[in-house]
Image (cartoon, rainbow, N blue to C red; front, side):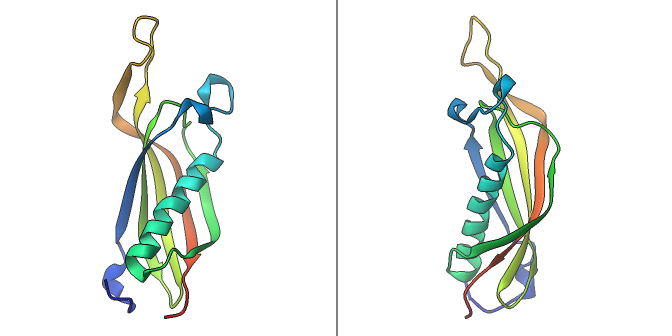
Length: 134
């Protein structure tokens, strides 16, 4: 992709899916700390910068971080970044973590899990990354 600024790049989306391992449970009820979602936002932001600019970029800030539902070990997450604004070196992205599946173990089926319908929005944020000058 060209490295020139192009308004048509706004709206570009990158999505990852990730299973949350039980080793990340931090609190009672297998809850995972909020920093886990922020780390995932960094992963999709890195891919976005590589896609748009051929560089991993550097995270500069987060704003309006909202934790709206729990993330638990055993969850299947979908993490999306959408390019909201593009400056000369800055890229503002909107992020969302959605729980699309959740572990549902029972005594008879300890590995049981189910897809959620509808999925649950767990975390949202806006973040700014910077890339090197072109």
